[in-house]
Image (cartoon, rainbow, N blue to C red; front, top):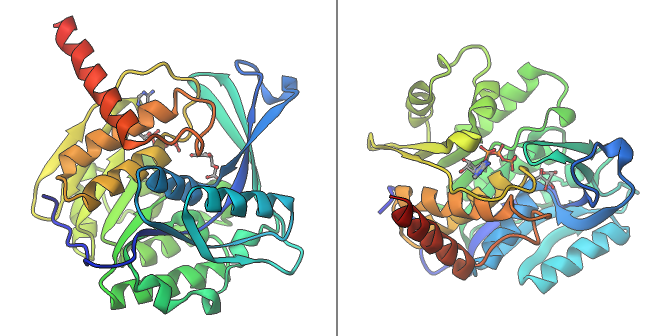
Length: 335
Ligand SMILES: Nc1ncnc2c1ncn2[C@@H]1O[C@H](COP(=O)(O)OP(=O)(O)OP(=O)(O)O)[C@@H](O)[C@H]1O
Ligand SMILES: O=C(O)C[C@@H](O)[C@H](O)C(=O)CO
C-alpha cells in the first residue's frame, strides 16, 4: 500500500491540467529533421499524453485546458471524445491563438529531439476564472504539468486549481515536465515550480528537472536531499527518473525504492516519461504499493518508446501485464 489516501466515491479518478497540442513525428527515421519529408500527426502535449494513457488504462479521466479554434483544436477534441476523456472543461480560445506543435526528429533510437512551436499558444491562455471548483472536487487526483506555469494567465489558473484541490482533499501529482523553450529565466522557473511543488503530494521528474527546480542550492542535488526537502512540505512520494538507469522513489515514511528498466527495441526515446506517469498514477489508484507502481510505469514506458507515437502508443492493462510477464519469462530463461 502506498502512503497516499485517495478520496472515494468521486466521478473521476484523474483530471489532468495543461497543454493539448499536436505531435508531428518524422516518418523518415534515423535522419535529421533537415532531411525529413513527411510526418505523422498525433495528439500530444505531456499532460494530454498522460490523460490518454490514464484513459487507455480505464481510469475515469477528465481534462482542464484550452485549445485553439482551429482544425488542430477540433482534431484534439474529437480524439478526447473517442477516448472517453471528459473535455467539458477544455475551453476554446476566441482570440486567434494557435495550437502548440512539436516536430520530432528521430536521428537514432538514442538521439531524438523535439522542435516546439509554442508562440501564442492557446493552452497558456487558460484563465483562473475558467477553473471550476465544482469540477475539481469531483476527482480523486489532479495532475498538473510544469509547463503550464510558464506564463500568465495559465500560471494563475494552475494555482487556482491547486487551491481547490487542497480544499477538497484531491491528491495532486506534479509532473515537472520542464521545457526550457517556454521560460524566460532559471530564477523565474525555479520560483514558480517551487511555489507549486509545495502544494503537491507526488512529484515525478528527472534528476535534471529537480535540479532546475531546486535552483539556488535548495539541496545538494542528491536524490536523498531532494526527497528530504520536499517531505518538509506537502509531498508524500518523490519519483526521480534516470532514463536508461531506471527510476528511484522515496516515500514520506522513510522508505525508498529503485526500479530498473525493461529491455525494449527503442524506436524513439520521448514519451517514456508520460507513459511512466500515467501507469504509475493508475497503479496507486488501484491501491498498489509504490514499488509495483514503478514497475508498471517502467513497463509502460518501455512499450511506448518502442513505437512511433506517444499518445496513440499508450498501452492497455492487458498490454502492460503481458509485457511484464514476457520480460520476466525471458529473464528466467537467461539465468
Ligand atoms: N532506453 C530505455 N529503455 C527502457 N526503458 C526506458 C528507457 N529510457 C527510459 N526508460 C524508462 O522510462 C522512464 C522515464 O524516462 P526518462 O527518465 O527519460 O524520463 P523523461 O525524460 O521524462 O522521458 P521523456 O523522454 O518522455 O521526456 C525511465 O525511468 C525508465 O523507466
Ligand atoms: O510535451 C510536449 O509538448 C511534447 C509531447 O507532445 C511529446 O509527445 C513528448 O515530448 C512526450 O514526452
